Structures are given as C-alpha cells and as structure tokens.
Length: 335
Image (cartoon, rainbow, N blue to C red; front, side):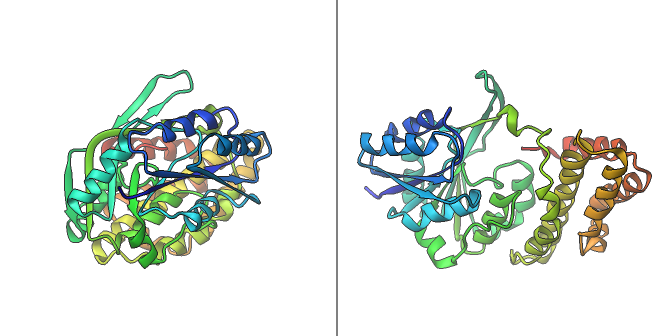
C-alpha cells in the first residue's frame, strides 16, 4: 500500500481542528501520514496540534512563523514522505473512504492527479451547494481543451479536492506562491498542468467545505489590492501550451480578480468614505499593467467596459450586478 501524505495548514482554527483531523485519521485507507502545519496561530491551535501528535503516531506537527496558506503548505510538502499528496483546509472535513477511492483511481488510471467532488456547508450544517463530476480520465491535451470549462465548473480551482502524485510535483518544482494571496490554488494547478499526463475525475463527493461567516464576501482585506499587479504578471507567465486557451483563462482570471477586489474590498468596505473608495478603485485599475488584453475577449471586453464606466462614475453597483449576471450565465460562482 502506497503512503498518502495529508497536509493541513493551520491558523487560528481551534474550534474546528480536532474534527478535521479525526476525519483524516479515521479514513478507511490507513497508510497515511498527517502533517499539521501550525502557521503561527494565536489561539490554542498549536497546543491542540501537540496533543493530537500524542494520540496517533501517524501525526506529525510543524510549528512555524506565520507566512500564509502557501507557505504552510510548502512546509508540509517538504516534510512529506508519501507517494501521494492531499491538502486539507483545517476547518473542513473529508468524507470517509475518499482517500481509498483516490488511491484506487491513481493506481488503475496511472494518473498524476485525481479530482473529486465536494459540498459547501453552512456553519449550522446545511448543505449550500454540491459540486461533482462524472468518472472520466483525460490526457494532457484533452484537459487543456476543456480547461476553461473546468475552471468555470469549479473543479479545477482548488487544491483541497484533489490527490496529487508527489513525484510529478517533485519533477515540476512547482510550489505554492506566498505572494499570491487570492486564487493561489488555481495558479498552483495551472502551473502543474504542464506536467500532468493523465487527469482523472471520480464520481464521488469527498470533501465538506465550511462556508464560515467570517470568510464571506464582507471580509474586506486591503492587502488584496496591493497584490493586483503581482497577480496579473504571475498569471501572464503561466504556460499552458495552447495560446487560445491561455488567452481565455488569463482574461477570465484577471477580470474576476479585479472585480472581486473592487467589490469585496472597496465597495463593501464600510470603513472607507465614498471619496476613498473612488480613489482606491482607480488606483486598483491602474495596477493592472495589461488592460488592453482584456478587451480582446468578446465577453470580458463588455465586463471591462462596464468596470471602467462604473469606476469613472463612482456607481459601482452597475458593475456588480453585471458581473453577477455574467457569472450566472456561465455557471461561475464565488468562493
């Protein structure tokens, strides 16, 4: 039985941590190692990690200074000894049996990554959304051809609904980028795609994503605005191997990053005055160094024109509803 390394980045999740770890150690597939990465938690998460290590010899813990999600995952990856890798957010849970199903698919299909479905859950236990896909294995070129659709249907953009072959990641030398503070999982998967020969989807819901009230749309983090220029340049460098697909993916990612930044972090920020909001909107747009590329996409061009119009007029509500309508038509929903 090949070993699976399951990595949990941890930051201030004392309320959820034990439930998450229990969902991992109780998997039907027992040849696992659980790597808890305490990313400088300020609550009791670090002490809970130390306690959990004593309860199961498959669990190990790393305590480090706070560096963000990608930094914590990278630290866990460096310590991993398994043939396969899973990343689990420490306020979520995985369903029993999913590790076994993924290993089986890895072995039978000789895949570099296995993708499974997930549920979005409210804090009171209600299922908000179910995302799952049919059993299918793609070669690299086939995956590239349907990549835009895979991003839109929310199967490709996360790290936590996947099992990765570690040797492929080792060969790629692709690691999480701590400077990318939003959509980092999508950037990570897009960079790995170049090294994937076979990608397998399995018809199983294996993950419960907790939609915490503290992480909903009203969470205004102005740090995201500072990362716009870096994000755009980072995405522009991604080599998918198909120019047309690269253009469509680039335009979609940049447009949605810009719209999310403006809507969630400026427009809905109650601490900012109307004057401050308008100033930040214009500054954010100016940080996008390749705006003319967005005009080349017939759909995104309309979005961008509406964005410019809204920014110049200060009436961002028009743009918000236009984006939401476009999302609904294409089946794209915010995290």
